[in-house]
Image (cartoon, rainbow, N blue to C red; front, side, top):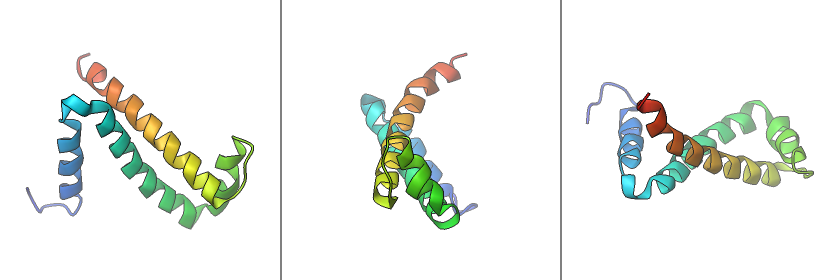
Length: 92
């Protein structure tokens, strides 16, 4: 593991998770949740109305907890979709 970039260990962790083919959908969920948590923190700090009102309003809800819950569910779903499409994109 190289120390040339502070994010190297995280990228190698995600790459290792993605290489675990027997549970590819679980890798997608985990990767989506990691990315969703990072993006959720950024939304909370920089664009609070989006996470508290806009995202939950898509489901007729309101509030920060509802926004975070919906955001993390969407992140997990998109992680699985990306994990399913990734091998197809690579084999073009």
